[in-house]
Length: 160
Ligand SMILES: [Fe+2]
Ligand SMILES: [Fe+2]
Image (cartoon, rainbow, N blue to C red; front, side):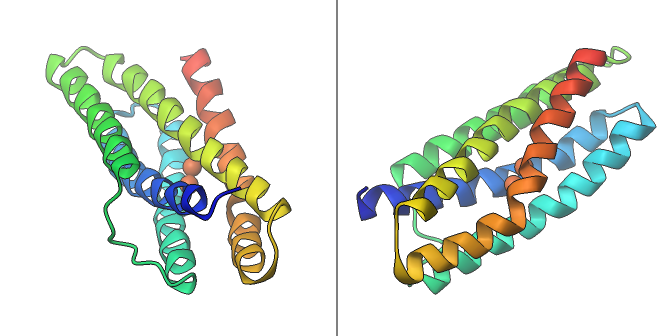
């Protein structure tokens, strides 16, 4: 495991969480089902906390959370594209359609989010010292929430 890859993973994780905030904010403009709305409101708040958690991890590791990386740019681009896709569906104005697009956008975004945290969990298993300690604490805080984010919205996407 290379330090460079861990750094890149953490920067991508931060960008994914930041994109997540924008995606949930837009998804909440698309939602029609009250129960789903409630879940997404909760996930938006949790995602804002995840941004904070990853920023803290980077700072504790002596890394600048604002540093740009090539991978980060790609993640941002995908996030912005998902927001645009929802905007497109909203502008069509067809009942239910934007909500469906939003569930798919959330599933795509949460697949990446879930994957990042899974990999962070793997890094914990294969590292020692401060790095392991800092990542383990962060991972324990978000792991269960990421499972719920992905699997619940996948379920909604199927049901709707
Ligand atoms: Fe997250
Ligand atoms: Fe998530």
